[in-house]
Image 1 (cartoon, one colour):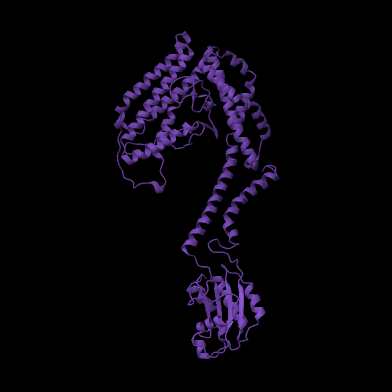
Image 2 (cartoon, one colour):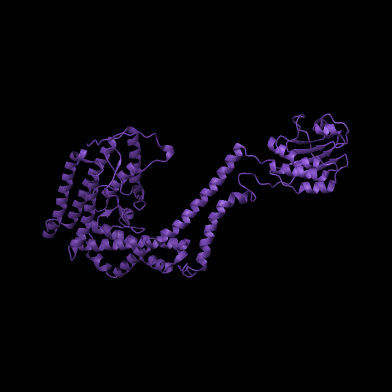
Length: 552
């Protein structure tokens, strides 16, 4: 049997109490509608109003003080004035008329009859009326005792019937308990007045209940996800921090090798200087973070520190490597081929991304891609020949980087032409929706390169009839190590390069100060546009249509 974790393994008593306290916040949000409603079901109003009581015992059959005290202890769902009136009449033709006449001729605490309409009772008045000295036949006819309700007392016919049923045992007694009869009748009425749901009340209460449940769900998801995100990728970030600390002493030697008159060198140094100010703060943050265990990961402070150290450890590690690659490449010193290969690998990844577009469409469109693949092959041979020209001194490293930028630009144009061709072959409505989703994905880079939409679309691909086809390579996980974004250490600025939004001048074109968007982004946006499904309320009736590619 597995041994349960100790308090220290869970992170200590403080972490346990903090974890339980945050979970109780979610539980409190779930039960909040019940708390607001006085501990009762939120779908019914709470019984929170004590009645005002007025007794007119002209027949002398009640213990006034006892009955009044018992009635005042009752609670109702809405404000109410309870009137108990016992008439001394021996013959009653209409108990309602007798009570009206009594109300007009005797002083009362509040008006029993409406000011606007003398034919109806006041709004919030309940009257328990009796004529106990009437003949037995009149009692059977219902004239010996009646209940009258004001128009604003929300009680239906079933509730009124239940009030009558509750006192039947007293009515059949020869020596009945009049005090218990009145208290029982009013007590039963308190359970039904304001009890049934109207549409407005039901909608209001249901909306309130759903809001609190949704808030609780969001809180649980936020809190639990916060701990998982804080712990995810922390080891990779710690390794990156150890690397950058080990290289920090040598960085001045590498920065001195970078020519200050070369635009690529200036750009890399600028990005390094932007992030260099985080060295000291990063050191303090790692010291404060320490090595959390167990439930300590769910703490707010640990979560914030973890997010900071992961982001800037990876960025500083990547920008340090970019400085080293830039120094070796621009000065053509030892290991410059490794730096050049790092630049070429990013371009080769774009070429592979272009080839992925050919997989979904099937053999019927192979001819459309022949020229495109030939163009990619020629670009590949061009890139392969650059290393030899650099070694022989035929071109400068800066010129080689510019060539790589132009190659990536051409690859992106090929990919965008393919996307336009696929969308052009769709129906008008489908094309509009796909273009909107495509732009949504691509624009997520436009505002901030770090705010990329994280799409994990799996391995599904689309065939020529719009159906998924299997046995094809799926999307990569958007360049991530664990939960840490993969930062680029290339000399050329890519959208995932560190500090790119602080240095870049333009997001288009070729040059040291422009940002190159990987072709994989175009492919991911294309897949997102095809595979993403709108919410059900935005969907139109599906129509199976075959679409074709219009290649321009």
